[in-house]
Amino acid sequence: MNTFLLYYPFLLALLSFIFLLAKQLRSRKPTPNLPPGSMGWPYLGETLQLYSQNPNVFFATRQNRYGEVFKTHILGSPCVMLSSPEAVRFVLVTQAHLFKPTYPQSKEKLIGPSALFFHQNDYHAQIRRLVQASLSLDVTRNLVPDIEAIAISVLDSWSGKVVNTFYELKKFTFDVAVLFIFGHLNNHHHRELLKENYYTLDKGYNSFPTNLPGSSYNKSVLARRRISLIVSEIIKEREEKSLVQRDLLGSLLNFKDEKGQTLTHNQIVDNIIGVMFAAQDTTASLLTWMIKYIHDDSNTREAIQIEQKAIFESNDGGNHMLSWAQTRNMPLTSRAIKESLRMASIISFTFREAVEDVKYKGYLIPKGWKVLPLFRNIHHNPDFFVDPHKFNPSRFELGIKPNTFMPFGNGLHTCPGNEVAKLQMLIFIHHLVNKFRWEVVGSGGVHYDPFPIPQRGLPAKFWKETCTQGHPKITPRKDIKSGRKAS
Ligand code: HEM
Picture 1 (cartoon, rainbow, N blue to C red):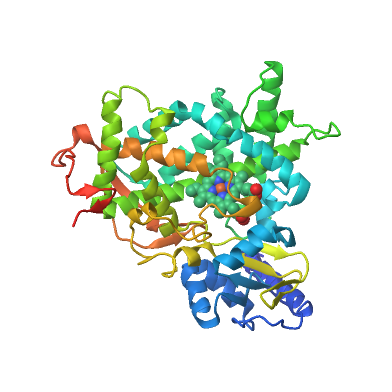
Picture 2: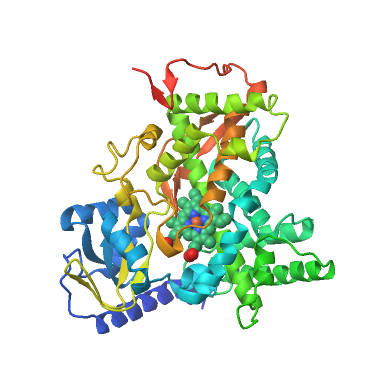
């Protein structure tokens, strides 16, 4: 009996695989006229390769062999890979109505089927307007002091320690996401319960989707149910206190369509979890990369320090909070953020599915096929970015070719949180470079979780500059302008 239990998950995995394979073979259509990638056996092999290695290497090797539009098989589905800016624009912008977003069912179940990124058309447009409104510049500008307070408190907790940078940054980005979703959530009990359960949900996101009691996936499903109850309590408290707020929860609660219909509780919860999910790991992963890039590139780091020190000093050595105007005028740091977005390309690709047979430049993309716009391949293509593997923020001083830089996607589903993400990074970097020095501990390497992050979350030691021994104060260097060394 015990042995059976031990092997049960493996048996389940094997049976699921055989079932998927059989389904796939039954539904296999005649091969259309797309350039062939590896279309044959083994389907599972390609999926495992994709998830266990740098997706760029996975796709790039195939792109070199098969060109900019080619077919392959992953996750048991025939897929078309797109790595030219024109083809990506075709799918995400000009013919977006022919391609619907598609995610594995297990992920959809955890985030919630009513979350906006699984939808198209009217429902998507309605929810998107609400999400955009709660992340708009008008809302964001008023939250600068709050974001700054969160950044300072996270950074202070790192002082003198070796920390797992990614894991710690997840605390920062979680608290900022909560701010946009729930406003100033003063009820400490609700905040802690949300955090605890969201972390459990997050842990199971990439686990094997089995509902066996005790499995990570099952724990996530249960945590999700508890989050739904916590949101109910927060709503009840708002109603009792007659609180009307401009945060995301407020927008979702106040929504009525033209027929006077409001959103259901599940629609509200799914979109709250969806925005948390979209906001937390992405921004934390990008900031981790940026900390690594500017650690490794002393010229850029010093140039950013000079830019940020000038602002710090104009704020009386950090005695005044950052203003919105100051955050909008950090050109060098902004370029370093763009370059980090390009280099790390944390959203390497996205998934769509053809809703009907579609023709593109003489190729047929059959209905039901998955279509993957490969952002990272475009970001790392030497035809668009000279010396693409070099961290060089000054490349953004010059214009870049249209549709070649899409870290936040493109078209109807383009990231509504992009300004919020950039603002968080600017504020965090401002305090980091003004008050701290840091050393990365250990060697390089990349881990996929599913976003690429430096190995082991980038362990690093952080010192407060005032208590730094043997770490010199920054003095402006005359030979550096705009992140470039004068020749
Ligand atoms: C560095 C940080 C971030 C990156 C690189 C990023 C990237 C992206 C990308 C590429 C998409 C489009 C996906 C697709 O077309 O399939 C997207 C969508 C989305 N992002 Fe972000 N994102 C980031 C941060 C954020 C933040 C901070 C929020 C919210 C506060 C957010 C909320 C969303 C939402 C709600 C969507 C779905 C939009 C829709 O389907 O209409 N993101 N993001």
